[in-house]
Length: 334
Ligand code: PBG
Image (tube, rainbow, N blue to C red; front, side, top):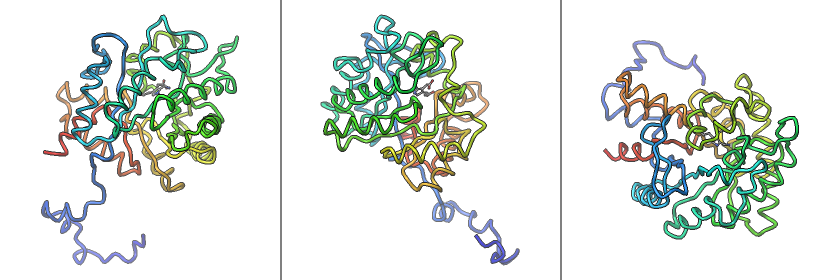
């Protein structure tokens, strides 16, 4: 922008464009829309849904409640649901074999959702943390190091099992090197030419995933472990360009930045550099933080949630994972 072309006050009065609601709406640069929303859900094989202590008003959904939720999403015009399984301890193992069982919780859920709500896009998480006894996203060696290449072999099977069950979009959130290429090749080989890959390309090692780990019961498994040697360092920005470039070249259709609110510089940078579809994940800790502020009376719930999600959109994200998706869809209709 050429600032020197701007005529000076009083020829230019910026407030003219803000005087009435009508003119403000005409010159708006960003608008939040139901098309932007993706609803993440936790699913359980229990007969009843359960509350999640660290995420007030969000539940681990049993199959019946999940189907009702899906119906609600469709009726609001929300196009996509993202599934996160809560796996019973008895199915966890050190190599997470349960992750790719054709009759596993997630695979059965995908099939049921697609048969009842064919238009609703189903996005699945590709990572081993819900399935491993140690809570890491991959397979560990004797030194507790998450091995890259062995893990990819399992992730390939996991992603294929999701595609076979009917998933529209598989979303690797594990941050192993080379997994996008391996998953893409596996999908092509098995004739899933149109299964989309949403790569969590720039996923930071963030404390804001805390409530999620409580929700999927992986925090106990992870104990004092951490994910610093595979998730990105919050101090880094240029590194996200290399992550995204690699994932696109390996066959990702969409890239994700995560978390969202504290990483909007990264969203803007990636969108400007690659001009590809960029999604962002307003994660569990962001949800919990806004919820707590609202419950304490510090912030207006509706206004703070709407402003936060609109800002994520303004940064360049065209799809936003948010645990507030249903409320937002309702508010957008008011
Ligand atoms: C697992 C995964 C995580 C989230 C999405 N997929 C947690 C983690 O990496 O530890 C976090 C989502 C949220 O906090 O809402 N690979």
